[in-house]
Image 1: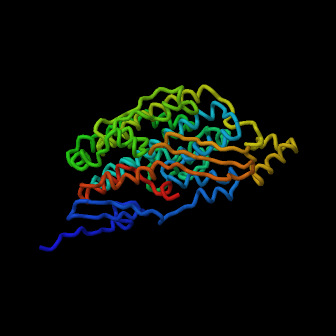
Image 2: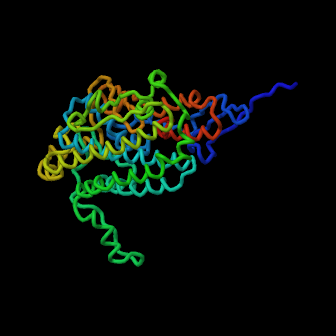
Image 3: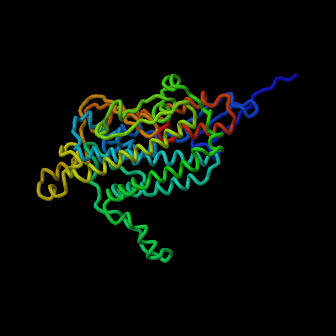
Amino acid sequence: MAEIQNYTLNFGPQHPAAHGVLRLVLELDGEVIQRADPHIGLLHRATEKLAENRTFLQTLPYMDRLDYVSMMVNEHAYCMAVERLVGVQVPLRAQYIRVMFDEITRILNHLMSVGSHALDVGAMAVFLYAFREREDLMDCYEAVSGARLHAAYYRPGGVYRDLPGSMPQYKANKYRSDKELKAMNEARSGSLLDFIEDFTNRFPACVDEYETLLTDNRIWKQRLVGVGVVDADRAKALGFTGPMLRGSGVEWDLRKMQPYEVYDRVEFDIPVGRNGDSYDRYLVRIAEMRESNRIIRQCVQWLRNNPGPVITDNHKVAPPSRERMKTGMEDLIHHFKLFSEGMHVPTGEVYAGVEHPKGEFGIYLVSDGGNKPYRMKIRAPGFVHLQALDEMSRGHMIADAVTIIGTQDIVFGEIDR
């Protein structure tokens, strides 16, 4: 009798349920996965090497392009690393703005994660619902930075500018009645903070809608429950962080365990799972959106009542105001020197980690005293999670590989950096 041999299948990058730059080679026995081998290198952004030839400020926009679903949180880790090397103090108002936008970004990430995961396993409507709320939050990005995606809003020493006092309005056209236009612009008639507060008031009902469509849906549960199980000890051994670790029942969150900015001033809970399967990780992300909404509300309240500077007054790190540049030659020189030569960062090395929506995102930065990073190493959560794809997939069917890729919430910009 002839020996039955396994056969090999290329699952992606062309597969509609695989990430566009993930080549996953599956070794199969029938439809059962014996081995999963992820191949990276099809994107290769070379961000760490590019940083060595850019000033500290010029490197900042590259952070947005790593995990391009969690833009400002990437910037946050980089800015914290530079600030620790320089020893600069960030104004309190800027810290609250950063925390608020970190949580806005967390919601943006989880909406994309849950929506696209549902789409991958056959649920169409959730994706459309999730993007309805993403549009509002993208408008918040655009209001503060001028860009919907690659914001470059955080800067070493604070943020680029204070929150705007007005929101962009929808314009009249032949397809909209006056009544429709008025309803669309109702939440946009005030400041950005008014708009964000209105969003936080209605967002819990939106999360309820996602849960109505998915949480007790028997098809959704059949596709996720018991798939990709990782117990607590194994999750820690594999280096999991974020929802991947908390889904396995480990209550670890840098915002609580190693607080940065003003996370020790706001109230929130850490959701954890019990079984360590794909369904628990979904529930953790749903619960995290509710907690992020709660943090944003607290930040809005504080920012309303506490005006102040949003960037340091150390002009070796941040430019002087335009008013001061018009009256003082020294300030004008500081401005041109900062944007042409860049800041000189003291010799040293530092690591700064933040609780990114996908896990711990860290920047290890080495300075030789020059105006450019000597070396930069990025600790990307998705890269660590991808290594576990083989272990999580073994013994499952081909269709379950789709669920496992979705539950890992991987974005290749940060993996193949």
